[in-house]
Image 1 (tube, helix red, strand yellow):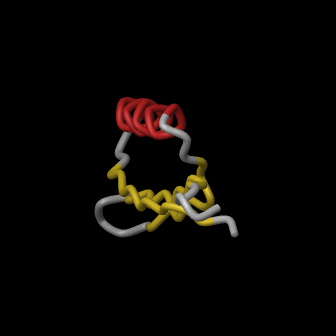
Image 2 (cartoon, helix red, strand yellow; image 1 turned 135 degrees about the horizontal axis):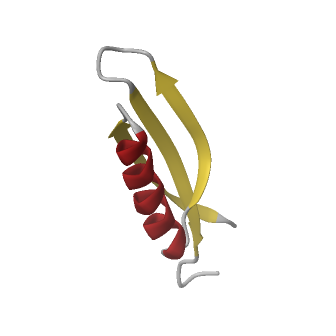
Image 3 (tube, one colour; image 1 turned 180 degrees about the horizontal axis):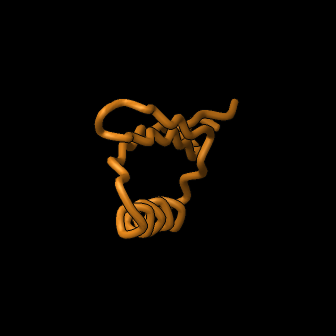
Length: 62
């Protein structure tokens, strides 16, 4: 059976430098085998993006 490890990352983005930093961090997680499942943009005072990631893992029983 497929099993997944999940991670949730939040980023406050107020300009191009923040977008660049978010991209760098997501690429780091991608190199670790995670893929983005969804991204939610919240128009709150902080202008937050929340990224939901997953990667498949195998336990010893499979």
